[in-house]
Image (cartoon, rainbow, N blue to C red; front, side):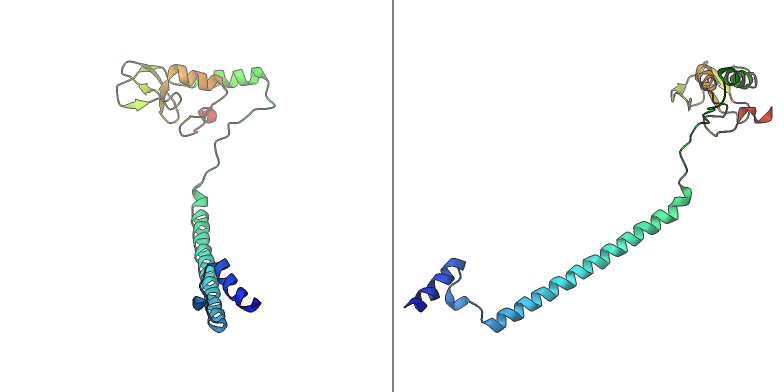
Length: 158
């Protein structure tokens, strides 16, 4: 009698009628096939991901030569205030005279505002880039002696 109770209790617990329970050999066969398919799929995903990683590494390696270091201004740590002001004075003296802007569609590379017709602009003597006079004066007073656009040194000719 106890044998017949377990026969009906186990299928009720797992909600499968006794007639639909797989035979042991077929069950083991399907489990092995399912495990094998899962294993092959995992290997396939790993290989596919590895190829994508290698592709990204080659792109990074290929483009690494074109990546520049960010501009770091010369920090003149050992210079006194008088030396810096002397360099600024020399740089400002080396600039050509101020002129009125001709009205082309340009913007000041320092403040990024548009240069308007009739505004006073200061050309950089080495490369002829033009800036608002106030912007360029602030740049030079801050210790910069290079063009903010192309980094040509204003004092290299003197």
